[in-house]
Length: 105
Image (cartoon, rainbow, N blue to C red; front, side, top):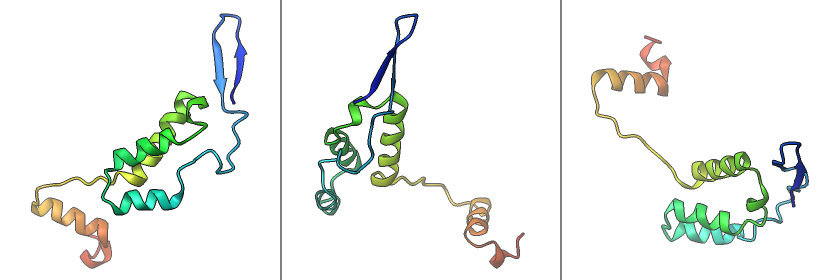
């Protein structure tokens, strides 16, 4: 579990000193995650399942929890932005994709 230190102002500081990252804290196996992915389960449901099956999530700091959620959302909740095609957006997309084809204009 985590280390709690009492400060003079009687606030508790929680840190991740005693958390061991040995891949045993997640009870959801990789095959179960692949099954969820193959059955078209929404990404938010997969992230919620990963959080609820993690034995160390509740003992992490708020920053570590937010970082964990963000990392899992990037992995299991793909995002895309739909933009109206204009000559400007088309040129910038082509430039980002391969600038050599447009002679680095």
